[in-house]
Image (cartoon, rainbow, N blue to C red):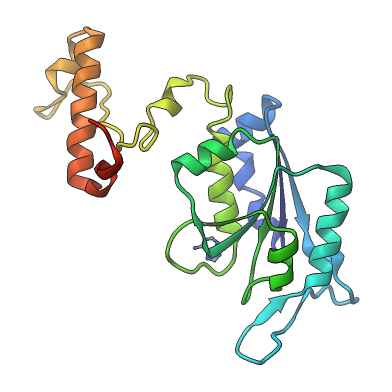
Length: 228
Ligand code: ADE
């Protein structure tokens, strides 16, 4: 998969893609990432790409022309499956959306800043608008990072044990069951006996019950759409 990200703050991504699963995906040749600095498409010598909003109001808007030039330049080289704009009024990121994006080859993510981007970019280039929650961030960079992380870990071969993505919270519509590691007894706090019994069927049944119970307690609304 190739993920290209257009941003005014490329340095914000420097650490993010260099660690853990995202780093491993690149090392394995399963992911390539290009961070594109929108300021390079500025129409003036100051590197600015924002301007006042027509009609007044507080806050600056990212201009249509630098962004259109940047996107069209990238499209010369890459045929994008989706051009995603990160915005609080977009479709909410969830596990089914991450799953479907993980099947794509090429994604372009536009990070907004200030009051947002000129609406004409949304109308003429953007194919999908994604929010990471009902709150407003200072810019789309964190959202782009969250989207990338949730998607890349689902690309087949990125995780060493594919089971560990399949057993993630939300993959089966439930939150994940409790997990434990050694020692089996710490200060008298004991790991449930069934997890030590060695019978995979019994363990699986316990994990399912535990996931169901936790979902009832923590996220009861998830159970509405579930056959169980
Ligand atoms: N940009 C600002 N707030 C955002 C949010 N909640 N989700 C995605 N992009 C954003």
